[in-house]
Image (cartoon, rainbow, N blue to C red; front, top):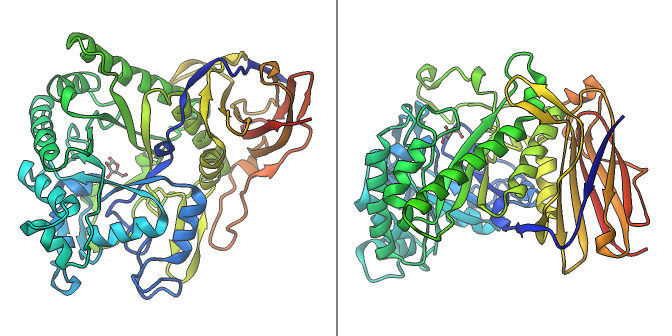
Length: 505
Ligand code: AHR
């Protein structure tokens, strides 16, 4: 058996947890909007066409903020197409996903949906085919109270009150050759800075996200961030990161340690942002917006060029296993560990398209395996993240080199005294004994231990389906003990665990 030792102490804290860490993403892609959150005529849809079964799952997931409308889609999008009487809205080619966009769902529908879901909206402007003027027009339409052409147009469309959207993304993945309007860091940095300045003149209360690299493997990763920030550093609030993880071939050990790759990615972006701050002699510590992250079997995606102008086609509807949920839960732990710099994180995407929620037209919506670590983390990671230095055996992986065989992250809610310990055992067949020193907290007891995973290969490959939507759910584990300020618990092989400690004897 492995042993994982760590000390939790209320004196050692990383940062408060921003609820925006539990965000998600709705793109006009595949069946995320149409047939996902919005399906007029469905048995469980309301008068606005919003699927109530999906809305319930979104609330259960604990999502705080939702980014919209893309993604790659936004770089060819005309926001005006999606407002006003639905019958007058044009059908368009969506070049990003070679799909037909009906525009039946647009900004005002999205805003109504966010209210119903209880989430904060985060909008992206098109800096692919459009520019400063259209970004300012959209902002005026969305946020200006009235008395101008565009704000009065919104009112005439039934949205009397301004939407008051605070979070805005300056385009999407502009370093990617697949992006409509793909450009250089120099060009994008200047464009983003000027768009930011103009948008702040329309509404000084907005918060702006500038595009970082599309992923850590881009040849320009690092230099892209540095150049963009040379121009935009003083004009933006956040720098974006995007990352998708999958198992490559038979290399399971690297996949199980994907969180180590995410850790290093974040550290690289922080270093680059701080390098620019140092050059500018600025004390500003730019926050990060990890506004697309998830597991995605991207190498199996046939590619955009093979798509064929369908309306809401089934695109990248990955089905997740229990093992995926373990890796996914560990990625969430990494986001928490960097709560001092990551202010926003969006699980990409929300429904059907690599989503934690799945739908079929004739079936109730269901939760995929990855739904569970997200919902439990969003529900129990409260207060501040503690600085934890777990000590455990390490092993070598092809992708990440030397990595620890287990990971531990903990949060402490001073108001309630509750501690949430998130622990992952990455070993394929050895269980681990978790030994925590919690003497710094006074009297505590173990409220519960929940676990996803375990060594059984059949169990690890299990999935949730429309026919068996509860096949994979977290199970209660007994045996965790707390005595004399020391906790011991068993972590099954390949498992994600939540251990809740609460005040009391
Ligand atoms: O989430 C799917 C796509 O992945 C997004 O449209 C794009 O931003 C990223 O490359």
